[in-house]
Length: 410
Image 1 (tube, one colour):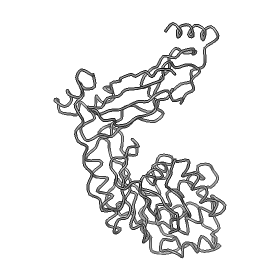
Image 2 (cartoon, helix red, strand yellow; image 1 turned 90 degrees about the vertical axis):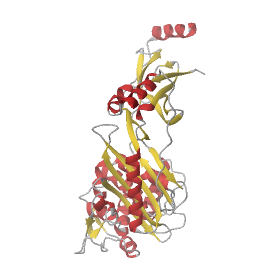
Image 3 (tube, one colour; image 1 turned 120 degrees about the horizontal axis):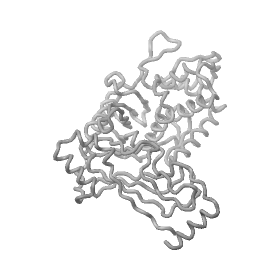
Image 4 (cartoon, rainbow, N blue to C red; image 1 turned 90 degrees about the horizontal axis):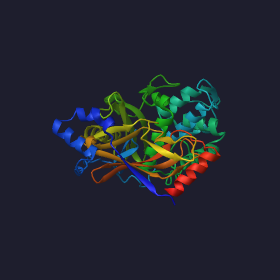
């Protein structure tokens, strides 16, 4: 087995702007830490989240993929209409793959109409009529129409049963272990369960994979077949201009639920915005779920910083390659490397890469070759897989022979 090589890196170039905004004494301490001229000061205590009146909740920094705070995040819950996030994911996937089109019209089945009649959340579509896919998407997302949801599920899956199987396969692709879907709309059904953590994963994938479709979630109202507009039940859309989604849910068993997301300017990476996502499950009322989710979002932005250390595909280091057509290869991450720390602690971050040594060609772009560990004092903030950013084909016969001799001597 080949040994692992550890490389300590200074994120100084990526934090210079942040350090410049800090008081001189703090900036100097950060520089000393980053340059390794003194032992890093221990990280200060992590900020304590607020009290949240809900059965389970979680706050996530979407860009960093980092949970900032949570309670009962892995407890099994009834997801109610938050189920429609997975339904929307598959609908958007079908639209992206050209298997469905927004201007396409669908004939409404009796099953779709009847599902809408079983609950107050409906779009008021009628059996046998033709309705545009874009209107159905708005009906599902803005007013949580169960009838619209079933109509879309039938169009994408061929039947509700096939669509539910697709939902559960997608949950497996996402790596979800506790989530099982029994229907596309979220009406109560035995075994129809998820968790706050896994619902946050579905929501995150929806935001990252289909960012152009977030526009539907920020719509405040929509009406179809009735004169009076139906209002989006996400009260935060009226209270905070930075909130642009995402979904409400309610059943007697689930209580009042909300997944709320917002984008605000990020001082830790000037010129960029930071997205947080709050999951609140089992609140006592519509007002309470909005208040508690907003409390979490405001706390996250006020008490933490998101610091970008490296851009996507930016080399973190250049590693020597043996038996290759190139003598070295850039190593980094396919995604931006962003970490979240308590407010003002960005200057204390240090990074180190552990990689396999020697790296033997051929190497393929995207091939894992190590791990970047980000620390704050003695605490590991995150660990990010490192990959080769460029292909490195094998060298010719004599090149491989020469490097074999060099490795033998080494």
